[in-house]
Image (cartoon, rainbow, N blue to C red; front, side, top):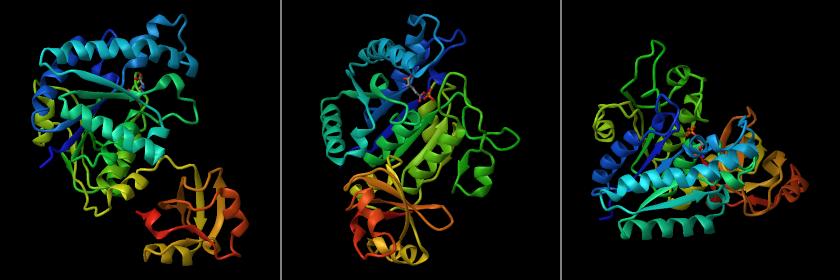
Length: 344
Ligand SMILES: N[C@@H](CCC(=O)OP(=O)(O)O)C(=O)O
């Protein structure tokens, strides 16, 4: 049997020390624990910190998108060098995987990425992932590495996604870390803090959004800090941070890839009749579409919204945006086949 996949995401703040620089001590601790986990798991490390490592080289750094790109390009090799140095002590070579959105939105490219990662694991190589910030434009970039880590966890059908953050876990109103969340309901959503760490991009809202997606697709998610000598082992034993229990999911790999599509390029609003048909696993016809937003081509992934504007699912469409618009409410043309639709 194949070893389970575990995706570990490290935010900038959690690997940065009080002086604002990436901490060698923390990377050393991460390496020694990940080296242990690597015996029993196929591990993917998703590490932020490129911008944090490189920004000192950009004069009068203000954090514009171009400065961030430049800082990341300088910082990424420095960051990977730190990991390379620490993992070499455990004879683990590291591979740098700089990802872009289309590596996930295009199934053909995603399958190639998957094959390459399998080759890494077969050769005892640890993939360390970050966004390819150099060419990530404002509209195209991942909302943050929490999203990137989630897309990887979903795409690889991971058992566990560990999101490491400087706040150490998911807190209730009294600022106590909740050890275990069975289901993300309205009460849990009410605890969300919108503040973001000054060093990172993603706040707790973004973490919870992606946690909800991952758990609904059958992945256990742990939001935790790096306190103690064995934070990952403690997290997996339910003794560090918050464990979000995975929900039952019987979607196939391809449907999971579809469902992970925050990579959607447009929205189809549908009427009540269409919602009923979709819930009965039927195809989407243009007659049930009430509105089309965005520009997308045939074969791309869009969100589906009901009359209350709630996102009810995603679909890989058979027609481009214009053709669906032409068919709205009149023609009975296939907009998306049942096999290409996932209703949440
Ligand atoms: N790609 C960027 C990280 C962006 C990001 O998501 O940061 P964080 O919120 O600290 O996980 C970098 O390496 O600096």
